Length: 58
Image 1 (cartoon, rainbow, N blue to C red):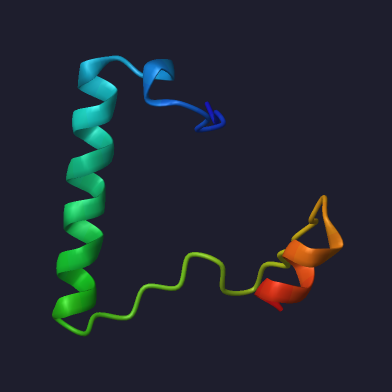
Image 2: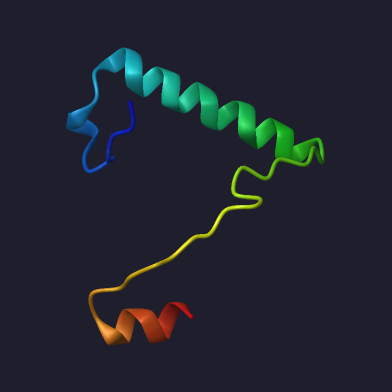
């Protein structure tokens, strides 16, 4: 099930540990030069609330 990550308090300790472990695995893949493209073939849209944010990021 997908969830939004709004606060650390939304997760129990086991979920946080799993999240950190996954981040460690992905960082290791990056260091080894392994190709990992989870968004390949997908369309991504970013919607910004404030024009200044959009301009600064784009």
